[in-house]
Figure 1: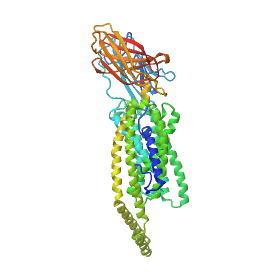
Figure 2: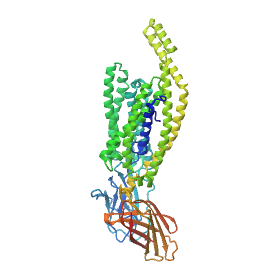
Figure 3: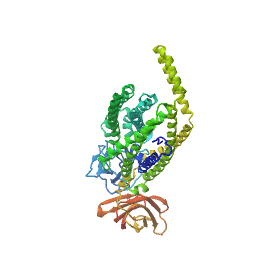
Figure 4: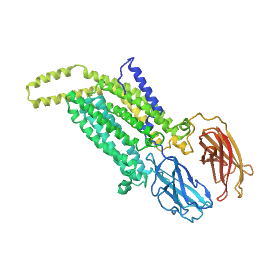
Amino acid sequence: MSATAPYAGPSPIRRPLAAAALLAALVSLVFGLLLAGAGPASAHAALTGSDPADGAVVDTAPKEVTLSFSEAIAVGDDSIRVLDPSGKRADTDAEPKDLSEGSTVRYGVALHSGLPDGTYTVAWQAISADSHPISGAFTFSIGAPSDTTVALPSQEAGGGPVGVVYDIARYAAYGGFVLLVGGSAFVLVCWRGGATALPMQRLVVRGWLTLTAATLVMLLLRNPYTGSGKFADAFDLAGLQSVLDTKPGAALVSRLLLLGAAALFIAVLFGTYARREDEREKKDLTFGLAVGGGVVATGIAATWAMSEHASTGIQANIAMPVDVLHLLAVAAWLGGLASLLVALYRTPDIGSAAVRRFSTVAFGSVVVLAATGIYQSWRQVGSWSALTGTRYGQLLILKVGLIAVLLAVAWFSRRWTGRLTDSVVASEEAPGEEAESGSESEDASADVDPERAAQLARQRAALTATKKKRIRDADPQRSGLRRSVLAEAAVAVVLLAVTTMLTSTEPGRTEEEAAGGTPSASAPAAGGPVNLKMPFDTGGQNGKGTVRIDIEPGRTGSNDLHVWIDGSDGKPMDVPELKLALTLESKDIGPLPVVPDRLAEGHWSASAVQIPMAGDWKIDVTVRTSDIDQVTIDKNAKIG
């Protein structure tokens, strides 16, 4: 819900402010408001190449197998395993060697000498620089392909029950952070009287407990999450020590230490601060708590920024402080909103002045979110082709649409909340029988002993609170607020499902880079469909035919590629394996691998084939017509 201002009727000033706030929020959300800040979608590293290549058939056994990645990774002893056709280790079982040069990230493992012919499986697993586990497998053959007993892993790294629990803890950590920081800021900035309200205390304390518990779970599960996937390894001391030596592990420990300082902050806020009556002393203490709390909140936010997606990729030195600002703005807005709802539902004393102050805080938060969200979205997607031509970009568009619907529903919730607040305040400020009876009771209790007077005061306070609660619950505006909040919750559930899909989807920018380079930032070069015809002969029986290739639109950016194979008789011809690669030799780009999917007999297709720049591209086509008969042919084509 987006309750950012009390309803003020047809005020000519408040309406433009509300419209401006809504517009700023929509702009920020369109450019990935929540995606880059609170959502765990990250720029995972991707395998960009290998030697031998996937599916390659080499004449003699190589001395080593090397893998190239799109960004820095962390590897361990078994990060790269090479298995022979019987499933035995073909590598020397040593830690992968770092063969990186400049911006090229490459690791390799040595192989045993005298390896027999057959199909070998390369299984790899590592940790991306953004803290997420990645894994994969491929095969190559020595001499000729053969049967293999090796079963490729069906579960990706970070999956399974351990991955589910870890992801739940990650979402819970963000929620706890929002309640802890946003609730505390709401009390200090918007409603200082809330420090004495038990519901407000419970909200902030529960946020602290949630964040602390989630951080502990993530720390214990970090080893099995990035490794074996078994819950039992959560208590492996050696594995825990290895986690502490990593950047994510250090960030989680730092978060726990900062949460200790946050516990002291909460104790002072709802203890000494709540009991302080002298306004001057309370003002000084408010300043001290604001500074100390701000430092702690910034530190906790930095544990995400310094260990996950913001810490890797382009402009990391800018992205990390931007990410911290983004998280703090999210907490101030959404955590403050949760605090406002609790205050309206559970306490009788909040007035319109507190709501107006929250309106100012919320508006400032939305402005910050707009600026940081635009930058982070550009950093994650990077181009229109990645937005429209990748699954990540398409999910992002769907998510933005859902958030726009959520904002529309939230606008109605804001109006209901404003009306509700005004009616409650009016009932509290209106002089009535309760005030008069209270004065009479005070006069009557003047002659009784102090203990009896205190008891009467508590009774009067309870009666007053009960009456105010009855007035609030009978307010017809309350039913409208409940309906709008229910609608928001329904949209939020769908939004959360889409967000979860985004967290496991390769970001558009990374997907394009893994395919061989980010498309040019300039407008796509003009071009037209590319049509090629290439005869081939694998040398075996029924090994002759013709390959026909269409590339549309035949320019830089995303292209659709279709391949037809005709036999020597001119009829469609199926083959066991078909692969393509694109190379721009003049710019030393490629080969960019393309593995099309079979659509029908003799017809293959690949969508969203990224061509980073215009030029004279060499197109290599590998056709295998039997277990041993294979040929690679090539032809140049002007693209763009």
